[in-house]
Length: 474
Image 1 (tube, rainbow, N blue to C red):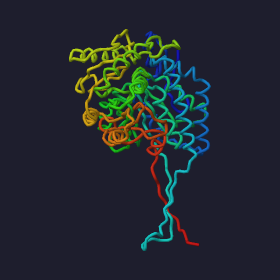
Image 2 (cartoon, one colour; image 1 turned 135 degrees about the vertical axis):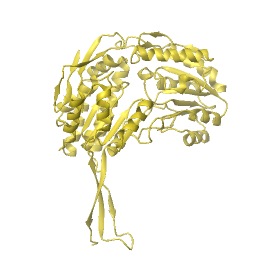
Image 3 (cartoon, rainbow, N blue to C red; image 1 turned 180 degrees about the vertical axis):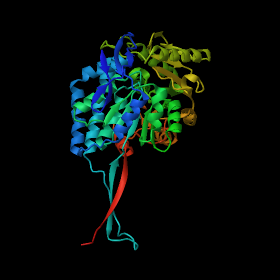
């Protein structure tokens, strides 16, 4: 069993109160982390804000690369730890560990790049013989709040860019999956990150959330989670930077000319990985009516082949969702859709936190199953007749995170890229596809339009300072 105290100042400490972490599959205790009081969290915020990370670019990159090498070496350990706390199958958690390494290496590479610009000043009759230069200065304190669905990758997407630019961070991980965050913080210290550059806390949310979000020393809040909570964070944060990566109901549009086999492959990859618990997972399969019957039959057949069960079994394709309560919500929403006229082609079986991969046909866009973010392994099929109808359905949602289109017809592809209201439109690929350093983020209730990804996050965690110098022409 793993046990972590509050990570602060290069050491772990405990107040004697603990948050227990149980595995969603077998229900056994797998670890615990110390709970910090509001007074202790306030002190940690002050200490972190007072910290200056006096590392060169090379030294910051070396910390990140050492962390990446350690995770590669200990990938099996990391994967099992994530499975312990999240119930995700080892195939998914091993993949997550690999992505964590990618984030660290991308961040290290960017830490070494020059981020300055030069502007000549003698380009107008009113100019002078000077040059204006820019440089980026790190923020003094960022508060990061992360969800349960990718316990380590969500954390590293916020922490690695902060290390790369030298910005101190206080992190509050999900109380459902905190172990990976504390383990990662200890690893950062072991790899040379200075004390108080990266501190981790959990505690009574009613007491500590106002400190983390409204604290006078906090210059930026970066939050990943539900749209409901994200709006509350935005309302409470006040005069500070905000990066909100929120919920989604991502559509995959299967157009009339699509290859059905390709579309089914993309659907399988875009729905069921990580037990369907991804903000970018396909929630709505919009299929042209001429292809829908075959698509539905083939998708149900492929889904039936998935092995859902013991997440520690290397042959398992899908483990649990985060807990039994979440599985019950998924089951209830599918039952509600069936009562409204939908048909279950495969799945909708629940055993504790295990919820089987499910295919539901004849879904309408106003069903709560797709109107809300049903955070699990459910493939909902909606039918359309024209491209304009498909775009109208795709955009008839409060969310605007990601989307995908299956087609070889270039005019239709162009129309979709321009017409879909989302932060990402992937062609002949799942909505979730991206690289760790490319811009990522949504609009509407999925976010404020600001992007994450290593490069954008590094920009967000710094501010631009300009200075000018005389520059005589030769």
